[in-house]
Structures are given as C-alpha cells and as structure tokens.
Image (cartoon, rainbow, N blue to C red; front, side):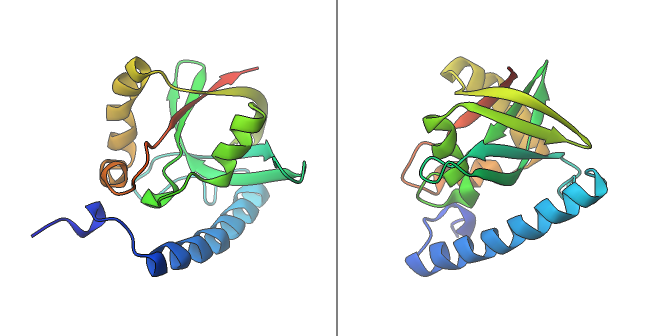
Length: 155
C-alpha cells in the first residue's frame, strides 16, 4: 500500500491544513516569545525551532513564523515545505521579495540574509534536515512543486 503522506493533498486537506497551521503558528509564536524559546522551541523529535521575522511583500508589515531549522556553521537552514502543500509558504514568498529578515533563536535575535540553497548545498544539508524531521522526505514527493531549502546567513 502507498504511503498516504506521499500522496498529493486534496483541496479539503489543503484548506484544513492552512487553518490548522495558522492557529498553531500563532500559539507557537506567543509561547516561544514569552518563554525565550524554552516552550515551543523544539518539535517532539527534539529538533530546534526558530522564529523567522520577515516583511510582508504586500503589506510591508512584520510577519513571524516558527520554523524547524538545522545549524550549518554560522547559517541556519530552513525548508519551505508548508507541510507538503501545493503552494509555497507566505514567509518564503516574503523572503523572495525582501531577503533581509531576522531570526530569533532562544532569547537572541540576529539579522539574516536569505537565499535558496544551491543543488550542491541542498544535497549536503538534506540528510541533516531529514534526521531532524523525517517527514521532510514525504513532503518532498507530495506537492507538484520543488520544495526550497533556504539558507539564512548572518547579515
């Protein structure tokens, strides 16, 4: 039998996923900020979470989203998976419009510059990403789009 996580999402699953993600994102950001990352700072598998603060491409307003990351030297690596949905997450589109952002890790913030990983970088960091969160492999085969891996480098 096929792995259900590897099948494309139905339109209903996409809508339900968007609502669920928005609600969970808001709760996670509040808990993270109030606790300095002690609460909501890791996924159940233990992989770390950061808060990525971007500038909305349409509104110009600050937007904050919690993301699983893996450190890579001085950089942070994140995945624009959106849970395997068929469209890119808003934070990724915001970074394409303005690659300057802020990363909040624990109780510290720092400015970063975002860029898509090269294919070579992607191959190198993908095993680290899937070790931190194995669902990324299923997400990669689910949508009809290339899931970007994003490098956040100190600005």
